[in-house]
Length: 191
Image (cartoon, helix red, strand yellow):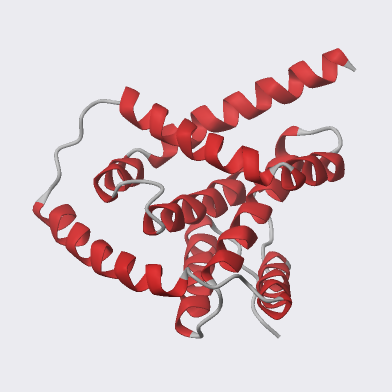
């Protein structure tokens, strides 16, 4: 039996390890990115919506519209935050990230098969079953973080901007969360 994950560090590490295992096993990158987005939406639905299932269905159907706006929102928030001076370690990481980005480009040219999508969905479902007592909001943050990370690799976000996003992640997610929560509250009062 796989052990339950009970704290934030374990949860973050588990998602990181799963995403890494997808790459090392040659799983389609687009399938992984889609899976991360779906998990983010699922967790946000639990966190902010009175009808999580409807929230999930609506936000996954509109993914082609919502994903670019979500990335743009992260970039706008990032640009509004104080300047971040890259450390020597950050500069070294940028070199590595750019090399990984080149590998990613090769892997990102093929559309996912049904088998890829099923594999990613099943693996994320298995992982979610291991989380015990970890808030859905925190899990949404983790899934969005790794989604944004893959967006950087697919050149939707510049590497230097990603380093700043990484540095200010808690502030950025908090602003995204508050916007989503406010939007959901406004939608509830309309209906």
